[in-house]
Length: 516
Image (cartoon, rainbow, N blue to C red):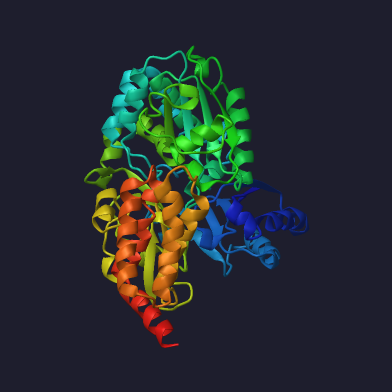
């Protein structure tokens, strides 16, 4: 029997993976092949999907960018010497994969996502078993030693947050996973939940043991139906295997979890809005204090972490906090799953230690723009992230370096633009996005975003530009300092970086329209 692996990740499905899978199963018999087709997640090379992998004595050999019409010739290659125009050789030796440092995403695209046996055979559960041996206090110390920071955007030290919840006195505590991944150009959370959901389950169970929580929730945005289905199936499999429930792995410790689906509000990516939504309310930002670590879900101490933060924990516990901290630089330790998207030839997820430059990312992994036109700008950190020109491409991908350059790292989304982009239009879009997605609770965000669109429109029309540029500065300062949460507080970042780094787009718009 020949074992084949093909992704069922949402991106792969969009590129025809299900049709390819059906054709493989249908045509295998006519080629005299006895095959086992395992549906995995994606390894993250979206530009290569659908990527078919064939188990061979020398490892898995890949056939990339497979289309339905290629299936007969691929099956001929499998029964023959393997020669084919789409053959990329041993997958893990391909430079796009070989030059990464896969810690969190090591199993994505490799295993059956809902098989506990497959998960354990590839290193899973080692972290959970060690956590049960260490106990609460020692787990938190390992996470502190690792230097793990929130991967959702804020970058707050995970170990400190856990220690706060651990020390809080309460009859009930919760672990909440924020999987409301809404930033443009980001897909790491979805990719992990579809490709290695048991890693997230293990990380949440470790968090529960560390802080004394017995219940957890994964809050997933409704636009991710495949992730929802895979997470639910993985939770059922984990319960059957004794990884969840009243006696996890025979330890006598109770921890269980469920999936909750959001309604698609971007603001519910903010932790307190998410908690309101989990409680059945409209997602609205809460004032702090109290912090969710002390009074979170249903008023109880709650750990709220992003998918990638929690999914990093099993590796940290299995290998030690010091081993994780050996990657990265400065205060940005460990690895960063970067999502490369936009106008780029080779988009996908790249996991590397913190410190890689934007230039290396775009050139070495992205291979330049998809259009072949000249690069002009890159936005890092989602719709509230900054726009960087070529002269800033040597900026390192770490929290402090990005902040020093006037931007933010956010969730690790990197969106590339060629020289057709209009940065004034992009600045206006930032205000429009904020106006649409604001929860409406605070005036700087609710009103400021609408006024921002109006001011940008006046600048574009060349109307009283000096006064309107001054008004734009004042408006951005008010939103930054006065907004209740990052929704309004960070909206000025794309506006100001677009204006600072691409002033010609703003001047040109005014001159052109004034002359018409």
